[in-house]
Structure formats: structure tokens, C-alpha cells
Amino acid sequence: MRPERWGVVLLAALLASGFLYYSLRSERSSGARRDADERAAGNELASFASAHNAVVKWTAALPPRGRFSAPLVTDLVNALVRPNQRPVLLQMQLSQVIEREGSFSAHFSAYYLTNGLFSLQTDLSCTAEQATRLRQSTTTAGARFAVIARITDVSRGLQQAGEGAGAGGSEGRASSATSPELEGASDVFVARGTCVDLLELPRTVSQ
Image (cartoon, rainbow, N blue to C red; front, side):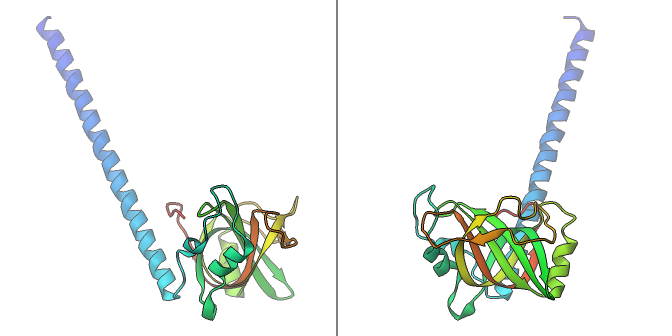
């Protein structure tokens, strides 16, 4: 091979090596930043729950009913309705905020895979200030919140066709209706209670 061709080959090899080096370095740097952001968000969430003495891993109290089986209503009552009205931490997506005769309620939803497969929706009374904070987030589709809630009741629910709001939510009618307490009738549950505090979550925080 002629010397000039060797020069071209060597230059190409050097350029390829440099590109690979900087790509790997950039990827490691991005991964480190992402891990740091997730740790910071996790620490903030832990501090948020600790400040209210909230139960964090309430799903661990659910007995295993089978991989694709929903829990019983009594399972969720035991897990969510705590002695001495101790609140629980819920990580959920905002559905809607409802105002009725001067009172406010916040509706959230989430799917869970721990010890079963089920959907949990909430109907939580909240203050006017909390309702305002939630409404301000509705410009962000799929807004997710850490919700400190004091749950007083859990029942099975049925999703009403044509009701409820999409991601981000808006004011409107409640999206769930209670149904007779027949085990196996639905994998949708409605938890009712009071919203104690709220923390909007970044997209990087996993449930």
C-alpha cells in the first residue's frame, strides 16, 4: 500500500477512535447526571413522606392473590386505612379537580403490579390552595404527584364510559362509580379520604 493511503487509513482510524471515545464519555456523563437526578428526587420524596410520618411501602401489606388477580377490597382497606389515621404515600397521575358548592376534591389514578394487577383511583377532599396548585399543573400532560393521603374508605369502582379526564385533567364529573362489593367484579378500586399534602414529581421518578 502506498504511504499516502496508509496516511488516509491512519487518519480515519484516529477519527473513529476519537468519536467512539467522546461518545462513550458523553454517555457515561449523561448516565451519571440521570442517576444523580434520580437519587436527588428519591431523597426529596423520602423526606416528604417522613415529614408526615406516611406509610411508603403500603403495597407490601397486600397478600399475594396471583400474578393477574386483583386484591380483595379488604386487602386494600387493611393496607390503606391505617390505625390512628396514619397517612400513606401515593404516587399517582392527576385526573381532575372538582369544585362543588365551595368544596374541592382531587382525583388521581395509578396502576399497580405488586401482589396483583389493579387500578386505584382516589377521591380526596382538598383545600382551595391544594386545588389551585393542581390546576396550575394541568398544562403539563400526565402530571404525576406524590400524594400524602389519609384514606378512610376503599370500595370497588367501575369506569363510566365517556366520563373522566385524560392526562393532565380538568374540572368535571367524577370518573368512577361504586359498584356492589362483589369480589372479582372489577380490578378498579376507589379510595376516599383527605389530601394532606402534594409534591409534583419529575418524569424520572419511578413508582
